[in-house]
Length: 295
Image 1 (tube, helix red, strand yellow):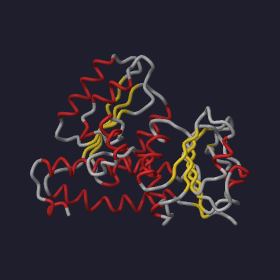
Image 2: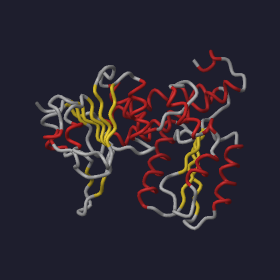
Image 3: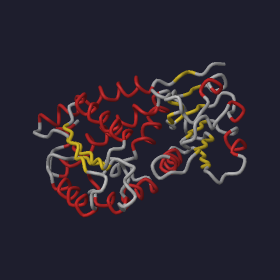
């Protein structure tokens, strides 16, 4: 068996094509969806990610702004800018590019973003909504949302399946588990303190790996025929990129697998744009636009 490779670039492109007519309808109503990205410091990876987001916005027709601050910016200055963007009618979605410098209170900064513009899904309201399954008022975090979309685009059954999520971060692992639980999977979460990781991963019908450790998952740890989603992206000493899964080994055992790069990454950016367009539509509806105008 050789796994079917899930082409995240192709799926992301299809999703972006779906977004274009929605953006056109909004523009016909006098609204251009707008995304603001706050970038602190000069982290090279962050700059690359922000560039990808800006390019994706332009492709779909979404207005984008990048607000750059030096690494030593004081917290009050950052919060004042977020508050100004909260009040801006041009901006419907806002994210703070992570990680932030250590002197900044990440939680306080993220909580300053207005709930209706929190398209990264990190505000406590959105996290709480995810827990109780409040689908129509919250924004799912973009990476787990992209993973769910990939699974569904491939027609992979989630209901009733054993799912193992390796990694318990607030950005990927925890929300991923909640979203798949909402889809009626049986979900286990493994983390750095998990003893004998392989005894869990070998039981997974769907294995989602977001641990940040290159090639952590090897073929003996994977059940034959499993679906393997590799969220990790690690730069090796020779400059090449590797996921958290040993791709060459595991692809001979899995039924489906995502590559790195070209798997989950393109979906993360695309779902951010999806959430931004969704935010613009919600704001317009709250301002009295009829449902039929956006259908």
